[in-house]
Image 1 (cartoon, rainbow over the protein chains, first blue to last red):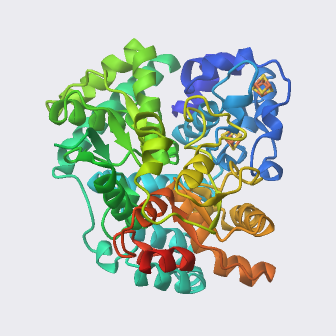
Image 2 (cartoon, each protein chain N blue to C red):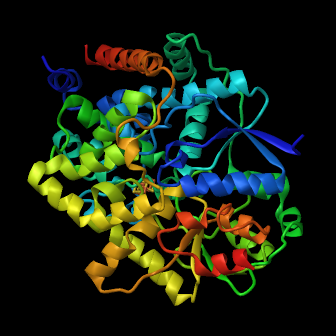
Length: 207
Length: 299
Ligand code: SF4
Ligand code: SF4
């Protein structure tokens, strides 16, 4: 049984409980008083099909699938406008991140959304060496839709790339080696353990 | 011995050859002038930025920062951690606070670190370089060292999001922080305290994944600087700097604008005002040349 199905079974009709137990800072959702301040705070406001306020309402209304498959949370720029304005001090940014990650963990995130894709490439890039290689990160973004469109995209950004190189702010050699921690294996061990601990917690909830 | 000493977390974008290597260089110059010694955290790792959440989840993401704090506690004991990157500062401080509030998370973080024989005590203050400048050193002392005031240079202080929220600098408002303006004034430049886009988001990591939506916001940031007759924008944040500077060509092509607005770091302003040359101030790292600063540096 997939984790998604396990969670559906376990929390039947109580999506709020599921969120409280499994989503980062999810226990705060019930504190929302629907004032609407956060809904007007997101910089990419009109790209959010469901602004945070609405997401919180939908969670209470048990609209599990609508929330988790939504690309709204992936429009969060981590600007923290909402957090400093919310009269109930909900950690809205983290709840949005938490919902997005939970959807991804269950494999039901909106697959065509570029930010969910980027966040994965970023994480994987970082995990290899412990530090981020910006050039590799940039190139993989352009190639996400396949080779041909990747070439087109990178041509569109060719001038940008040259400008960055000229100012020595994106050294091409970075692509082949780049920076990293001394012993990536150790770092990976640490993170693997953290992943296991987190997965165990969530699996326990699904029982 | 230097007057002040900190445990320094430079972050990925400040590495040699990375997008904000110009900040790294000008920060080094600035610290030399201000007699601040930065002891780099040995073997630091990426903070996982604000985009790491997608795959990282909570604990693995926080543990990335736990490792950095633990390294700092081991190698630079009793020194505050100072970050120059907004995202690094935010992630690290957020992690420290989460571990403080959530005993279980703290325990699990240590369990994970133990895999590599490391241990987190989590007693280290996590600070931003702007706090060092404003709280530890102060405008007055900074002003005293100015050799070449930035006379006649009109500077839009662009604070951005994450240097300002959710933590921000003590005593500053979230909607209209004044410390960058205070700094510009201390250096003898012309600040624009009413710059409307001071705390506007630049799109952050979404400038990559949602370029069109983000560039629309960036356009507003630059436009407002022109409306205020600014000669340049100055910012403390590496992502703000990059996002606002490097896409101006693309924005011009799309919107028919003629943007050519330099975007510099506060550390470059200080380096120039303290009489250092263009090279030390990393002015050659600008894609859009900050001519007025170059002129002062050449005087
Ligand atoms: S600002 Fe806070 S209380 Fe108001 S709707 Fe948003 S989350 Fe709810
Ligand atoms: S942090 Fe995210 S959810 Fe909060 S206002 Fe910014 S974009 Fe919206």
